[in-house]
Length: 144
Image (cartoon, rainbow, N blue to C red; front, side, top):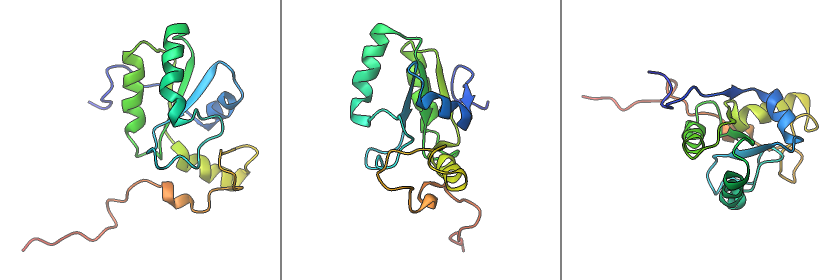
């Protein structure tokens, strides 16, 4: 019950991501859709370079610290990526559960210096584009 992962998932918070941005022994990857790569946490490996980079690391150093994030706390794609990376031999793998949504909220409060992103604009214009799906406050079809 709980995690679908066969191992205990190692979750991290925003401070770990801030540390990893400037740490040469850490890499940051995301699980956002390929069409949604314009705004990322600074230091995130480009999606088109991710596979080649991970294959190189797999042959060279499986101990590299890998941080994964998705869209928001409701996004389960980081767990799938986590399981995939663990299954091929990486073992220092972590998930930033807050995802891009939390990062952008923190940036809005504390500034882009502490919470940098890759986009050329100062900050993402509509943070709510990254929120999780709402289930309770929606109109449902009525069954007659």
